[in-house]
View 1: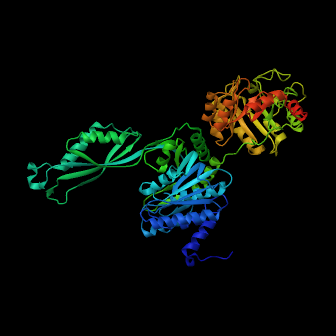
View 2: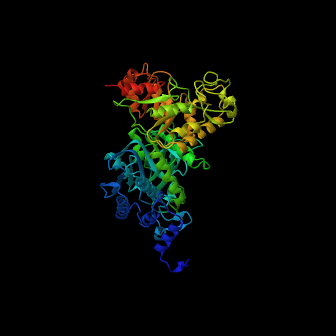
View 3: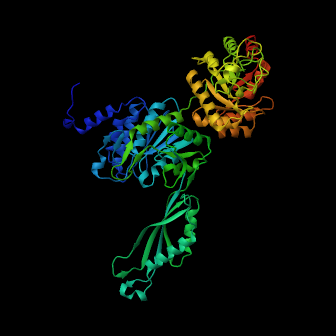
Length: 636
């Protein structure tokens, strides 16, 4: 190979060679774009430079076919909106910013050392801009995602507020990509600046004993206020009031007539600034002369299903980092989404020395964050297009059609598939030696010629017995899934029966059980053709933790109701399966409005299937699936 004299290369070519050596690929941020963006000195106060960064970002996105819109505020800031579908409202909205704090000219020359890129804004926040651009490119036409590229976040972030006020907003969730490393922030403090003035009687400092020194009055007044204001807890999550600026006098030997102090209020309660002002006004000689708020507190519910799903995704991607679900003491543009009544979070990529010399961002971690966001924003969609003739709900063969053939054996699943059935539901348990066994009951007593508790027997022993009405043993999950391998025209509900067992599943056993089911299903089935269901919340919660993007479904043993819908949404389910008897169209409509598809059970004949259709069901479990399909096919 011909050698290269790096000393003779210009900086741009050298940078390109370094990037090439990192092995960039289709699922990676555009490192060349990031380098060029970092070298635009888009200091917040320099509006023309910030606008150049906005225009540069827009040009890069439009090159990838991403729909862009630009708004201009009263100060001349250009603000960019880009989305995967060209609409002003998206399911999910990311917020990033292209402006940076001031720096020396040398800090606007990007350099790379390994996976780190050094420059002003590499960590705050242009690395996150590159992440957002990559997410838009990869999710175009696959998910509803929009991004606000703000222009003045470092000086208040009003441009994000302007975009929200002009109708650029999320339907489901806002994600401010700014800080957080491996965790997720679900709350942040509000911020307000209160200027107070103390009046006195000035004069020559030699006559201080005859004068009223406003500086001393200011100091004593603040001490009086501090003594009356509650202390902040050790974790910092409280209403903090701290002096940040003091101004008084113009001469070293003169006592001024007035002195001023700025108090920075970092609050967790919305009315904290008003309470501070009220107390300040009671202090003798104090006057509140100016109040400037940059945002109220923002707090989302950490148990919100979307937040839990995002947190689980990030924890599973970086299991050794132990990122936290936490509250942020600082403030970001998240505050501008606080009134939309949707979950709002703050996340970010790894970096260091933000706002300082040697600021850097980790490009490999930027790639990983983009991957994480793509996985979160475009989870696998279920194969909901499957319907029976006459736009009827899809019929699911319960245990392979146990009313017609043997219960949960390979031949029953294969026969139903050959007969035209495209929906299936069956149950999964662990054997004592932790093999995944397809079995409904706690024991093998009813359905086989043997006796014993499934979880108390090794699979080799279970295998010795035969399922009634067949000459087959209890199948493993892999043996059943082999029937459907490569099929995209099916939908399968994998029921986790661990919640109903005579052997208690420890936390470790439950995690291993869920992980084994997930790994097997993902390896053998096509994406979107299956979901994991359970009658209890524990298995669903553990499955959500080990497989954050897993499509979950709650099985109910009573009619559909608001409580069941709320429970399903709490753990992030996408399907719900109540009994048909007693369920109403109003509640099915409510489940659909909550983003849940509905499986009503059981439809043992065509009349019941048509009843389910009238109720608005998406699927129906049946013990007699072939009979129901034959009735449909015999219609005139």
